[in-house]
Image (cartoon, rainbow, N blue to C red):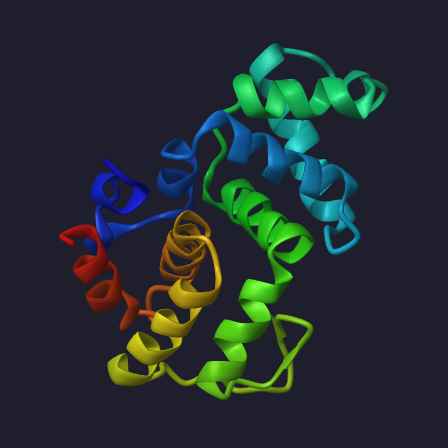
Length: 175
């Protein structure tokens, strides 16, 4: 059973996507958050606070831990809220899966800077047909599990803008 078979596409949230990830993908996301160039200090601070709360440590004690230990705790001990899960998913995709982001957004005709939608672009929900075509290209050119996660992440983080992905993902889940 794949990721899409386990996710409630009608009411999808980033924390739910995170909860269905395997340990290796979670580790990659946590490493991307702590070590990736695209990650901001706010995401790392949020992760540190979540670790501190879970372990009942002071935040300063967590910040003094080696990054590898913080990554380990984040992967195995923390159940992130939607905000932290969004930061983790975004870090994973921006750090390790940019070619997928670039190709998907380019196929949709959405202006972006190396896979990140430009701030000056007013994103209008793409039509389902365009999403299906762009998803088809992504599935053709990239690993299926990575595309599943990317599209589910988009839907979970902004269901209004990416609502058309429900149809695309529903079709994939039942296939």
